[in-house]
Length: 75
Image (cartoon, rainbow, N blue to C red):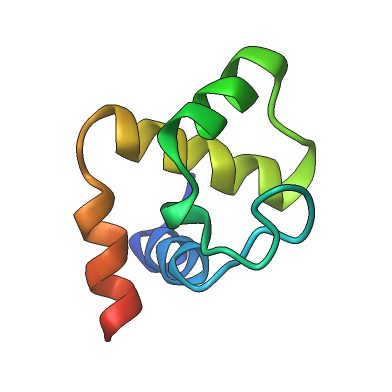
């Protein structure tokens, strides 16, 4: 079970992670257009941490909560 601190650390890292490759290379994950995230959701997210982060971005965008990550990024 994840601790609240590990969840917080995950979100802070997510807020500062940029896409490492592809069309949106060097763009913050939260700033990648929704259609591209949905494409990944349909195709399958990559394995590992990047996949977990993209899946979280998908859930955040789906629920209109991107502002949470943008607020963390500003801190």
